[in-house]
Image 1 (cartoon, rainbow, N blue to C red):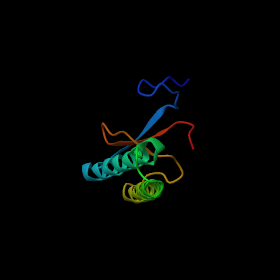
Image 2: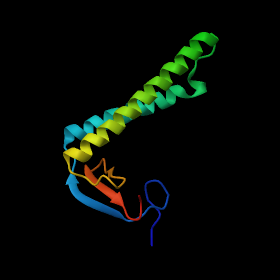
Image 3: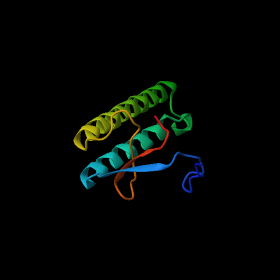
Image 4: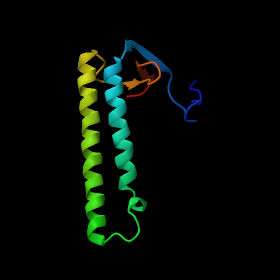
Length: 111
């Protein structure tokens, strides 16, 4: 039976470690990409536009944020493709990474 995750409060399948640890440089690269995604996600929000900005400038700001978010998500996807090959990880599973340990893992019964 699955338990409630102590970190997020959701129910997940059982964690299955893949006995492969990500190198620090690779982990740092993903962390940087994720930080950029988080920043771009914040910039896409309508309340990120300062008061008094013209409609044209607001439109350019939002479009730039959307473009950045798309580029960073593509970069993250590309990072995972390279990592799956480099570490010979399963291609048919949703591989995850534990940022604390660098261990790659999957969740039981998850496609």
